[in-house]
Image (cartoon, rainbow, N blue to C red; front, top):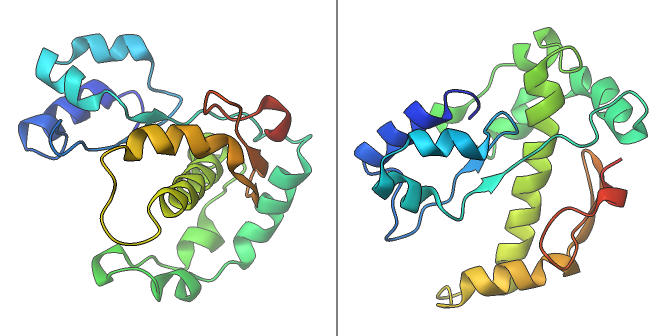
Amino acid sequence: LGQDNPSVLQEAYNRGFLRSVPQSLWALSDGAWPNMLDLLSEPARHAVSGSIRVTAAGAVESSAAWRRFVQEWPSLNASEFNSHLPEYWQIDNSLFTDFDVSGSSIGREITAFTFDAVAAAALLACAVAPQGTVPSTFGKQFVEMASEIDFNGLTGPIRFDEFGDRNASSAT
């Protein structure tokens, strides 16, 4: 989501996709400024509370990880991803052959960082609740364990500080 966040989020709330119980989690791009949320109804603002905002921090030419990602992008093959996706999410190879990931704000500011954010969230979720019922303290444990995450993502090494924010030194 980006600059259309308020209308998209309000409509998602109106249709029941954004909710407080059970809590839904949305990933918002760095185009989503907190003051945009003031345009939402009070119930929708409450429901979006706890969502994450993914900000671009390393998609710059000086980043070796970013240059490698851009270089490898055209060699990716849709079939490698489609085998893990439901039929209605299947992608076409033109995504990799025709999409200029480096020249696009979507590629530069969202794609790589969202991928890393989802990977980090998945690793954290598996660490907190590897199987069975999700504990009632899941959210608290999720944030507390963030500083234990350490992996190499598309944008470089992924590490978080004690507040659950990406360690600036890892966003290269």
